[in-house]
Length: 136
Image (cartoon, rainbow, N blue to C red; front, side, top):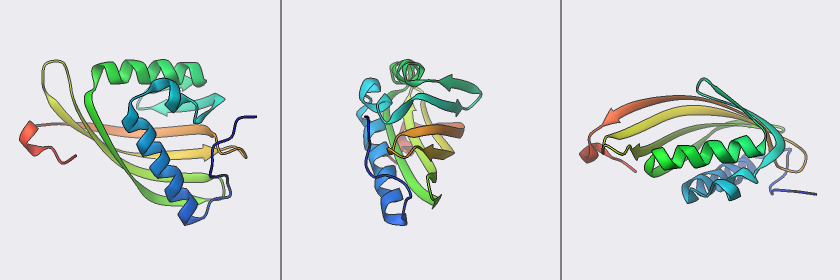
């Protein structure tokens, strides 16, 4: 049986641990390892895209990090309740043409009893920035 500590119900401390683990995982830019934090049948909404299942997550992340170069993410705690966590985030990347972007957004997460994420709903906005305006 697959498990990913910490397990729900979350306290503020364990919610923050889960957030840090997600940040670390996404910053590794390893789609295969990151996808293992999600249930086999996970459901995502990422901007206007709907992604279903761990395999689609892995492919989505592979495609994302091939286009979003020098990706760097920072997540922060917003709130939690039982098996749910809400986060705010920002990340920076550049495209192949060298244009830098900063993305801002919110995510709502829902976990199963084994600490794997069942649902991820993300709202994200991208802002073109000059390289000199990078924060991360």
